[in-house]
Length: 314
Image 1 (cartoon, one colour):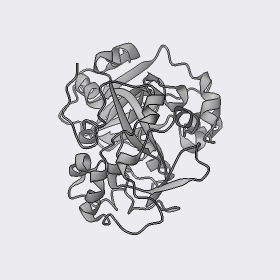
Image 2 (cartoon, rainbow, N blue to C red; image 1 turned 135 degrees about the vertical axis):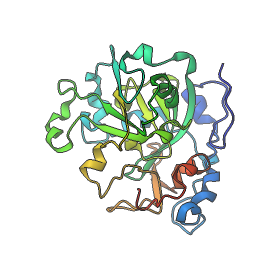
Image 3 (cartoon, one colour; image 1 turned 60 degrees about the vertical axis):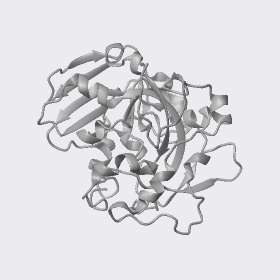
Image 4 (tube, helix red, strand yellow; image 1 turned 90 degrees about the vertical axis):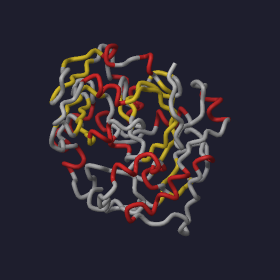
C-alpha cells in the first residue's frame, strides 16, 4: 500500500472507480489554488475579465472515455483527430522493449514487464491541456517517472532525460511524413522536472489498459506542460548532460519551445493561449474556460522555474 502526502492538486480517491462513477461524482483537482499563482514570474494576474468561464477546478469532471479515446493527436497514425482511433489497431504492443541508455549506471534493454512495477501503480486525475487550446480531464493509471529514473541510477553529470516514440513504418500509416517530421518522435525534460512527483509514466486510463491511440503500452504525462510533451509509445529513455533535441522544438522552434509550460500569457504565434475549449461531445455548444498558469499546478511546480524568464524559455 502506498501512502502519499496530499497536495493541493491531488484527487481524493481510495481506488480507481468505473467511468460512470467518475462522471457522476465531482472530482477535486485542486488546481484552483494555481489561479493565485498566475502572477508568479511576471505572469498576468488572475481574475481578469474574460469571455471564457473561470476554470474552477472543483467544478470539472473527467472527460468521457469516448472523447478521450477518439479525439487524439498521434500523427504516426494520421493527422485528423479521429485517425488514431481508426488506425492505431495496427500497433503491436507486446512484446515491448524500452532501451535505457546514456549517462546512467544501469543501462539496458528492459522488457515492459520488468520496466513497469504493478505494485506501485496509482490512479490520478489530471488536467490535460493541448497547445492547440483544447483540454480534457483524464483519469490516468501509472507510476512516478521518478521511480523509473531512480532504477536507472543517472550519473551526477546527467541534467536531462530524453525519450523516443516507436517508429515502425509497417505499423504506422503516416510514413509519408518522415522527411517532414524526422521520425521517431522525440521529447525531453530537465531532470529535476522529470523527478517531480506529478510526472507520471502511464499504462492505463479509467482503470483500463491504455488504448493504442492514447499511447499504449507506455506513455508519459507531465500535467503542467502542453500535451505534446507527454510522449506516447515510449521505446527509449536516454540521460544526457546537454539539452536534448525534441521534435517540435526542432521542427518549428518559433512556435514550440523546449519547456512548453502551460502559460496563458505566452501565446502561440498563431493563436491565443489565454483560454481553452473543453472537449465534450455531449454538449451542443462548445465550452471555453480560462487557462490556468502551469495548467493549475503552480503550487507544486512553479519553484522549478524560479528566476527564469518564461517568455524566453517558453
